[in-house]
Length: 285
Image 1 (cartoon, rainbow, N blue to C red):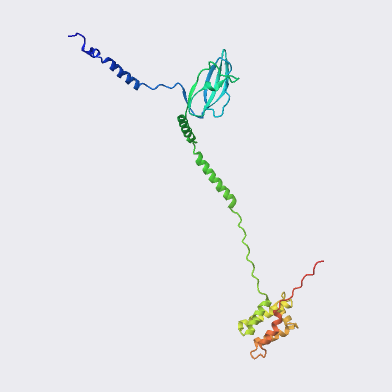
Image 2: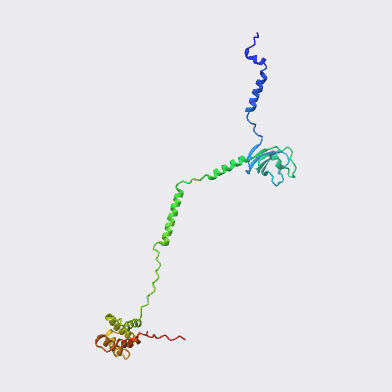
């Protein structure tokens, strides 16, 4: 029998190669993914890159419609043997790009030896950036000291004060005076009383009222309104215009067997039912 250790027996049986294949396969499948050699940037957001170049001056390549990357040179710093460029760029669509493709010599020729700077336009990063911007916009600035409550209270006090200035002790609008009712004239009242007399509807009170209306109408006719009733009554009894109608009326009223008829009384008093004529002022020349 062989004196070698039993643990090395599987090597002599040809198991070494399959074991190595299994180990390599496990390592290949479980190895971490290789990091990309380009920078992931969001779309539409300006980025910055520092380019150090010792060759001729660098300019931005002529603009082309629909270009995927917009580039500008923000600043240049002169150093011995080289220039340091502050390059800004904005990626417009997804994909992998190289910054050196958008830089050239001032005459438009391609630059030799310009370092490569690759970057990837990542739409996913753009969505995450939009979310971050929205979260930032939703943030509120809190002001202490009950600022908003104090502001609302001052506004309410100001409105109440303004209303008091406008309406407190404000004089009320004068109510429109009701149109004055036109009182019937003495001639109209006497005319109504005579109508009752002619229809036979005049009672004792009506007769007394008829006498009173005639006396007042006579005072008006003779312009005796300012005199006492005793003096006015004497003037009415002596006037040619009123004496006879007054005697007829009093005889008919105060004598039961008076031969005077009511038709005669109505005829005697009829002239006094006409409105008195008022003298009109002479027309001015």
